[in-house]
Length: 255
Image (cartoon, rainbow, N blue to C red; front, side):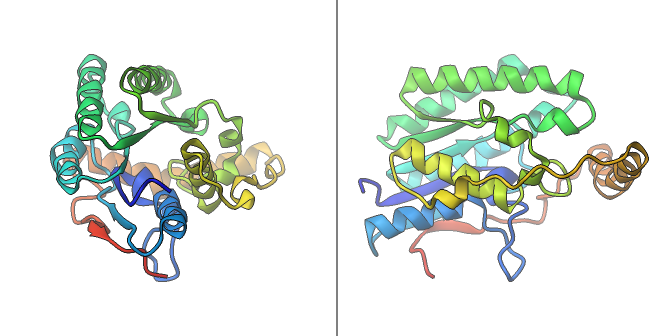
């Protein structure tokens, strides 16, 4: 195992929402990856997770990237931009340019860098006509940047398993426990590290829902998840305003 330290950088995807530990805190794919790497590297392995839900790309770059570089880890995962494509002010040209610059900086210190092409979350969300092309643009830029700078690419978009709603939480935006385990397995496979094959297992698709029941479920979802999201946008707030990184510095994995 050539990695003795790992820093995860990003937003809610990397923080681990909605894969909860028994105490209510979030685990997620990055914790699973770190635990597996630690098992292979031994007690000297160190892990930090700087990701915070709701963070836009500029915030991730300003707050987390310098901290990650200062730790000089062997491995960095970087996933950002997913929140930006949902915003009215999304500037694709600026984001693509900055994305390339950030990955260049992360690679310049000698760390291996893991990047992600995002899964197609818009299949079950409103605004698909507006947002889906933005996701495709971001994914294309991620792939090109990974190739240009020798980063490790994990292509979730190419995996049709993520079209299964059982891999997503009830808010339809974040991964479920099964979704996070699948991402963790794909990251470990991309790193050439073995993992529990059960992590790749996909739950059966749910039975088709009658039209009226499906519309009722849509209304409940809108009231519980969409309306608060819209309110935060209108008031300039974020779900991560009072949240701090769960693992702000490199430390050992403790069972």
